[in-house]
Length: 364
Ligand code: GDD
Ligand code: MN
Image (cartoon, rainbow, N blue to C red; front, side, top):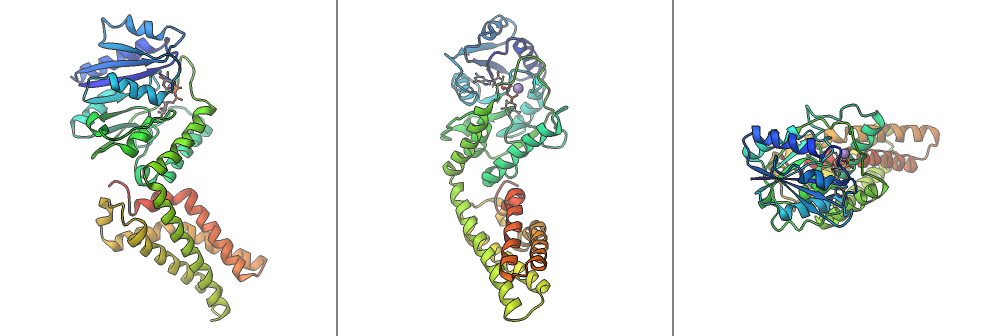
C-alpha cells in the first residue's frame, strides 16, 4: 500500500482539490493507498477541510501543535503511515497530483526511490523568470558540489515530490532539518534503484509560499551536516590535498622548465598541466576514491582517464589564458603560473566538481 504524506501549513484554499486529484490518480492506476495530511495548526481551517472529505477519500489528519517544519512533518506522517511505500508531495498543487501515477509505476517496476524531477528531459518549471530558474539551479548545483558522492548523478535532489520504499529507510537514522527531506533520504537511505520521473512544477495559484530566509539558511546548514554525517567531508579533504599537490607540481614544473631548461612558456605550461593532471588522476584512483567503491570504479582505467582529461580541458584552457596574460602584463613567471592555477582550480571547484567526482563515484 502507498501512504501519501502531505504536509500542510495554511492550505485550506487548495487542499480538497489536491486530495481529490491525488485519490483519482491512484485509483485509476489501480493502487491501494491512504493519505496522511500532516497539519501544523493551520489557522485557516485546513484540517477541518480535510476531515470533511474523509467520506470521499481515505484520508486522516495528523495535527501538530505549531509550525514545526516540513521535513519533520514528513517523518511524523511516515510514523503514522501504514503503507510499505511513502509518497511525499506538496498540498498546493505545484506538484500535479497526477504524477503519483507514473511514480507508482516506477515503484512497481522495481525502483526503491522514485523522484518527481524538474531537471530531467520532459520536466520543467512552467514560467519561472530566469532569476528564479538560476537560484533553483544554483542551489541544486551547490548540493551536488558539497555532496558529490550522493548527488552528482541525481537531476533534482531538491524535489519535494517522491516515493520511497519504507524498507529502504530502516537504520537510515534520518535527522530532519528544514525543507529538504529528500536530500536526507538520498544521502542516507538504503536504496538500490533510483528513478527520476519528469514533471513540470506548476505556479502556485492560491495561498503563499512558506519558504523564507530561515529555510535558505537551514538548507546550507543541512548540506554541511550531511557532508560530515556521510563521511564525505573526508573524501573532500583527500581531494583537496591531492588538488593542492597538483597545483604545486604545475607551478614548480612550469617555473623549472622556463627558468632552468629555458623552454618556451607554451610547451612548458602544457607539459606542466598534463603532469599535474596525471598526478591528480593517479592519486584519485589509489587514494581519494579508493574506499568509495562504486560500480563506475570498475570500468576500464583508460576510460576514466580520458573522461577526466576531457572534463579538465576548460580549466586547463583558462589556466593557459591567465598564465599567458599575466606573463605579458607583469612578466613574473612564478606569479603567472600561480594565477593560472588559481583560475583553473576555481573554475573546476565552481562548475566541474560533480562531473569530476562522477568519474569515480556516483550511480551508473
Ligand atoms: N506541516 C507543515 N509544516 N507543512 C509545511 C511547513 C511546515 O512547517 N512548511 C511548509 N509546509 C507545506 C506547505 O503547506 C506545502 O504544502 C508544502 O509544505 C511546500 O511548501 P511551499 O512553501 O509551497 O514550498 P515551495 O513551493 O517553496 O517549495 C516546494 O517545492 C520545491 C520544489 O519541488 C517544496 O515542496 C520543496 O520541498 C520542493 O523541493
Ligand atoms: Mn509551493
